Amino acid sequence: MTEKRWGLTLPLPGIPLAEMKPFVQLAEAEGYTDLWTGETGGPDGFTPLILSAAWTERIRLGTGIVGVFTRGPALLAQQTAALTDASSGRFVLGIGASSDRMVAGWNQIPFVKPLGKVEETLAFLKVALAGERTDTGFKLETAPSHETPIVLAALRGKMLSLAVNEADGAFTNFLPLGGLPKVTENVAAGGNGFELLCRFFCFPGEWDDYEGLARFMFSSYITVPVYANFFTWLGYGDEIAEMRSLWEQKDRAGAAAAAPRELIEDTFLIGPPEKIRERLDAYVAGGITLPVITPITTPDKMEETIRALAPR
Image 1 (cartoon, rainbow, N blue to C red):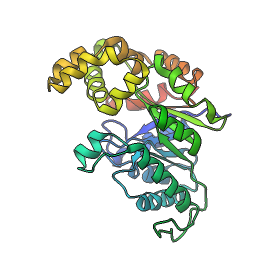
Image 2 (cartoon, helix red, strand yellow):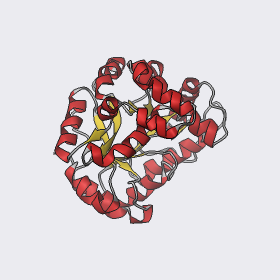
Image 3 (cartoon, helix red, strand yellow):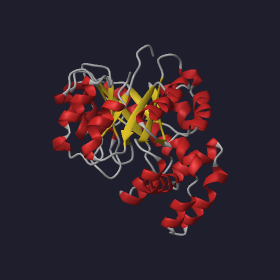
Image 4 (tube, rainbow, N blue to C red):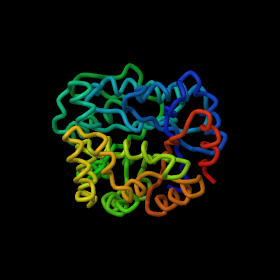
C-alpha cells in the first residue's frame, strides 16, 4: 500500500440516515479515503453505502462487515454487483461469520463451522462476480464492470490465514495495541498489496467522562464467545476471566465493573484528539494499513470530531 488510507465508520452514532449527507461529504472533503459500515443492531451494512455512493465522488465504500450466515451467497453477489455499479467501482465487500450471538441468538440461524461457511461463500462470490455461473446454477444477469476487492473479518489464526491466501485483506476489531504484533505476524505473508483494517472506537474526552460507557461496551462485546476467544488467543484470558464469569451469571453491572481498565484503555482510544491521533499512528506504524474510526460522541459534536480526527 503506497497511499495512506483513513476510514470513518457508518452509520454515525445518533445521526439518522436521512441526516447523514453533510457528514459524509465533510469526511470526503477532510481527506478521509474510506467509509466502512458496521452491521449490528442498527442499519444493515449496505444501505448507508448506497446513500453515500450518491453523495460522494471519490471516497471508497466498504462493508465492514456483512455476515455470510444471514444472507445467501447469491443475494450477496447481487448486492455487491449493484453497489459496485452504483459507486462506479468504489466498493469493497467485507464479509465474515459475524458472531454466534447475532447469528444464532438474534436470527435463529445455526452458527456452525464459521470458517467453512466463509470459505465456501468467498469461493462462490469469486465465480459469481466474475460473471460466471456458479456450481449452484446462479449467474448474475450483468457482471460488475469493475473488479470488487473482498476482505474477510478475521480475528484468529485460521481465518487470518484464509484472508491472506484467498482474499484482498483482513478486517480486525477490538484489537489492543499490545496484541497487534500477534495479528500482524499472522498476515505477514499477505504481501505489500494486502490490507489490514481495524475499527477503532474513539472517545474524544477523558476517562471520567466515558468510564461507564466504555466499561459497558467492553464487557458486552468481549464476553461474546468469538471475542472472548480472540482475547484469550492474544494472551488476555486471565485479565477477562472475572468479567466473563460475572456476565455468564447475568450480572451485567458486575461484569462492567470487573472490566480491566488497563485493557480497555489499550483497546479503546480515549482522550483528546491529539492523543487519539498518536495512538492511531502507533497502530499504523505497527502494521494497520487502514484505521477505521468510530467517533463515540454526541450528534452536536460529530462535525468537530470528524474534523479533529481527519488524516493529516
